[in-house]
Image 1 (tube, rainbow, N blue to C red):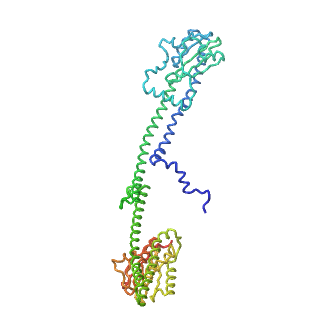
Image 2 (cartoon, helix red, strand yellow; image 1 turned 45 degrees about the vertical axis):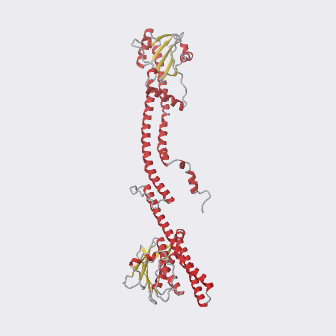
Image 3 (cartoon, one colour; image 1 turned 90 degrees about the horizontal axis):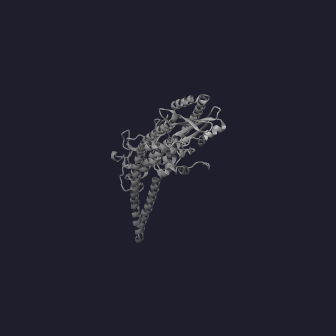
Length: 523
């Protein structure tokens, strides 16, 4: 019993409906490239690396400003100027001192005879690499919604009040750190700290170019690595898609041609060089196509044979019925009536046999297999035939050797095979001649052999006797009593059980035919 909430095949198809909208090549590319795109997204998270560097640099700037302010406090003006030049040159930063009234009285850039310790970049002469780097910086800041930073502008006046950090340092008496942004995208860090107790203040300015260079280097390395891997993955994905999609398209085109029936002998590629699932699929489709062609040909041939076999008794029946009104002789009318009755029975027998032959495959696909003792089955059939007097005074001798003759199959169908083999032997056996039935089991195969003492089957005709509507009857048997389907049906049932049915000559060299049925032994 199937639960109501159990997943069904249709539900599985619905879950795949989204992916089914894309071609197989596109899906392979997406699956292989999507993780790399996520890896490329790490480009934007380098901003956190930049933030960490700035935090460290803020701490360093605060400590430097405080240490410098303590060094400058309580020394002479000449010493202060020397310290400003020395510290500014060593630390590559600009140091300015403002007095208690907020006026600039010392600038390391102006005091240093060798010139400024650093210079801001003039972006007017930057090459395309730097311009692209600045554009990428702005793009990343936009994506991560980075907090905007005030542009750094040099004050034209020498007043401390023009610098908010200096005002805050004078009012609060503690050092202040401020981040600015230069036109080239590099951070500018200023630190303001009170110097001593006389109201003087120190302002340090550093252009942290190294932070921007480190971030851009990491970003460039990641971009180059991602692009290389993306390109390689793209090529590999195309190769993988080609090895999968191309043979599938060939199989699809061949299947369409087979369905349309425009080319009778469509060559379905078997791809023997491929040992993977695609190769297995190609060979399975090729074999399936061959089996379908064989079945279609068999159906066409069967239909033609049916029409031919039924046409003869119908023509005879029609002639007898049409002649009856014109015949007055009672004896002749009786003969015509007997002919019509015989033809009706013959047609009925043909229809029954044809119906059985056409249902074998469908019934076998739905039947439930069971363990059957072939010896018991044959013994029961022989006894039943004797009760119905169907053996015509022929003695049927059963000999069973080896293991128990157990097979796996469908009982009624195997019974039909045995009946057909016995019918054939009884038909060809001379009166009172014995019919030998032998059953052997070698552990792998169960063999049932039915031998008669009739004229036998010529070697060149041993396969023809299994052809539908092929019938060679004894001379003493009335015409039309057999449809010519008995052995064909028996072989079809044997093959449906993964067995075989063949015609042989007698092993003892005597006259007669042997029909040998082989079935896999039940494990």
